Length: 111
Image (spheres, rainbow, N blue to C red):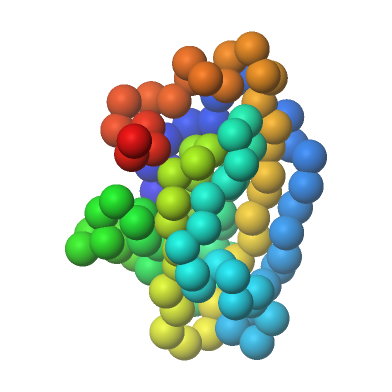
């Protein structure tokens, strides 16, 4: 379940996790956003979580084993957990020249 694709000019620069219910950083449970030019891909290896965009809190996305979600820069989000899971997050840098123009419609952060 990939909600969007990474821009073609993104390069991987860091992997976070794997995290479980016992090791998940608490900041991921609170509203946060990636910095400008930074994209993320959250992937579920075991269990399930709900991924929540702050601008659409009444429409959580249920992620299960094998699902992932692409997280654009500056769009606030958090995760909600209930039970056991394992997840990883890949972080990607986008070239500065195209970062401002590559967000697909619907993924633009609110003003």
